Length: 302
Ligand code: CLF
Ligand code: SF4
Image (cartoon, rainbow, N blue to C red; front, side, top):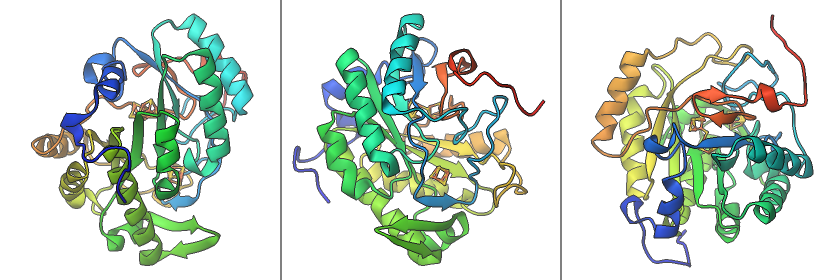
């Protein structure tokens, strides 16, 4: 799957109109993360796969991890909220769609939200986060919409490892499990990444490090996605979420995680400053203000 727009790109050859934005993106640029804020618009409730580490039912304002949000917004309310937050946070540079499900499994909402915000703020950087299953279908539309920053979570290249991480995928009206499901997911992720990178989109690959399941395989993932033109990888520790299949798995230690990141840094730029944000996070990466801007005024898990 090759991008029809440009012949060849790689991370060091991102076009200037992408690189200019990357310098203001707090996740893609370490230097930007203390200066620029991001806002997640939780307009994507559905997901088309089932990762064993995910539990989106657990909504808690004290909980900070991907998949958690206090409210789901329509594209129109997300647009209203964006305008409100932009007035209060002048250094807001990124509008991101990071769930709580999958941005591409909710494409109508995702596209509409981006179109509405673009009319108000043509300078904002749009950012999408996806499991990648629908990338072959939507990558051309991502490019057409002018999105220059995309994150794809790739936890393995080998379907035999994948069947231990993904319970199932729902694809083109059918449910696939085991090696077959993991194989389709991995193929789609890699094809979509190659296409987007070829079109000059900056790609970050998130990798969830899961002890004794994929941790030793991670350097191979980094090498492979580098070949495909990925800009940066973000190796994150598993958060054993209550109620998920991996609730009782041990977490990788920060020492081992950083060892892994340092080893992979020899191949490709690594992200060290990820905060594993909520799907409705607002503010600087290190200063989540989502509670301040949530219309759901409740406190849970006291
Ligand atoms: Fe959001 Fe993700 Fe875009 Fe950033 S988060 S969609 S790339 S704007 Fe950033 Fe948060 Fe880590 Fe994600 S700190 S979890 S890497
Ligand atoms: Fe949960 Fe994201 Fe996996 Fe979907 S892709 S099951 S939302 S972690």
